[in-house]
Image 1 (cartoon, each protein chain N blue to C red):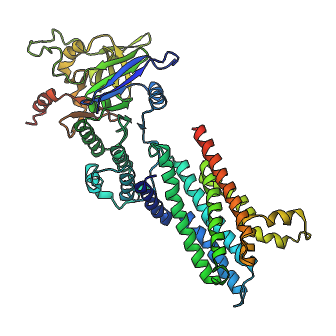
Image 2 (image 1 turned 60 degrees about the vertical axis):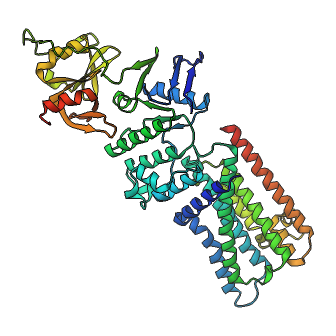
Image 3 (image 1 turned 90 degrees about the horizontal axis):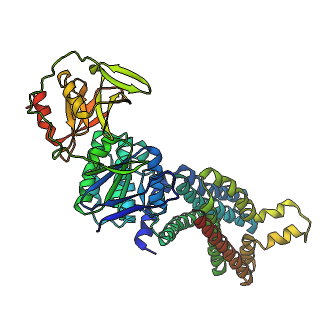
Length: 316
Length: 231
């Protein structure tokens, strides 16, 4: 199976910018954008490129059991893999005899994954695949992506959540009005973070972090902050689901906030370690941090940083 | 045409049928009607008109209704999205569903006639006639099922089909004057023609029913073309 190219050169489209996207068969491509652009992109993919998009908006057979649903799609798509294997792959063996209507949202989502897995179209395009599901289902999806990679099936994932884009994709892009920009996913080959340099904050006079909202400058107590993320080169302070722009870059902020228990857990994230509730280990050796805030946000944790964080929490 | 897909749809719809109360009730109506009429007749052979009212109810309430409800439900819940990779697979879906409908119609026919007696239909003309009637009602069901977007709307479409084609023999009870236009028109309706076949054993009425079947097939085709261009 060859790589797939999505080329949007439609000048008439006012919302969607022009771009070219190569779907590489060896990589999982994730595109992060807001809902409006996403809807427009899906529209373009479906109607102009004729690609089937997996958005889980179509119905399944609710009166039938999970097994009957899987058996039907299995036969319909002439799938070669045994049904039992599909059920195990998607962790559905516990609810095979359950009527689909009575299954939880996450279980239903796994049935959708199984259906899309058996569908013999390519490339595979997923829309918000792990939005609002449990950890088990997210892990199932990651296994599914591994399968696609193994069989060289080009895969595209559209999300409106940056954390999901970084977790799912090997290659992540950000789509906005100006075009398509690549986001670096792994920080292993990133800028030298001068940890070696003995950086001692000269003064501890700085107790507040300034951020701009319109014309006002708001001063945050470092302990209120959940985490800081980088968006288009700018640092954003995130508290619950609102973010505030700050002037400093992520590297500068990292230095000033180190003594308050902040930690650079990813190339584009600094987390307040006091607020970390959970370290989630996904199946393919990837990690996330769950923050103890109202929206329970999860942020990515680089593979290279897991050592440091384990040391910090004396987990070793 | 792909037999594996047809059997996939057939198995799925048969399982679904068994769990769907709305569809399961449909074959009950003509069977109850058959029981009531056979009790009324007190052991005597029932008049042909009554037998054909039961036949009409079987075809309209079972064949047409099941077919269009199944198709409307797929439309309403958008369950077919992603399954139709080519127009050929749409044909597979219709054939698979028609087989389920055919099976249910056959079961209902056998049960109903074992109650009112097989006597009047056991000849080749009537059997051909009943088969043509099945096709006619099936095509109507497919056609309506293609454009109905929800299950609720099928009950509205159901009514004219039932009264026009299912209850045609009842026109006698309306007390229309002999030779009036209404009677003449109703006389040419498919159910009346098949009744005539049982009565006289001639071939001509079968020709008329065949024309009705062709008409219904054209109706289905037009509905199909129309829904394809809508998408």
